Length: 41
Image 1 (cartoon, rainbow, N blue to C red):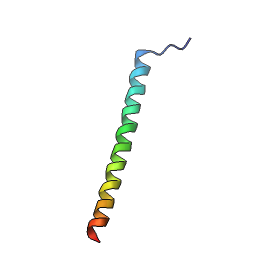
Image 2: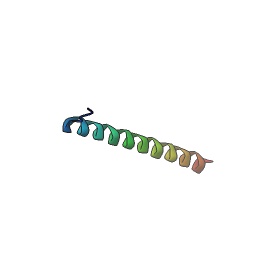
Image 3: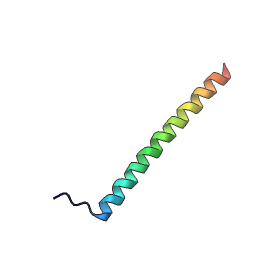
Image 4: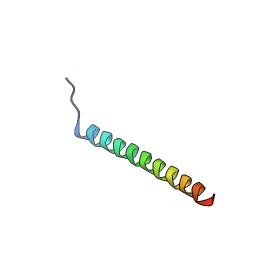
């Protein structure tokens, strides 16, 4: 009975990629901040 329309699939895929890129960006920013702190010591 579970029928996923093309639109739903596209929205889900977009949301997933947005989540992934947000996670990657947060990770990159955290690493950069840590690198800066270590570099300034």
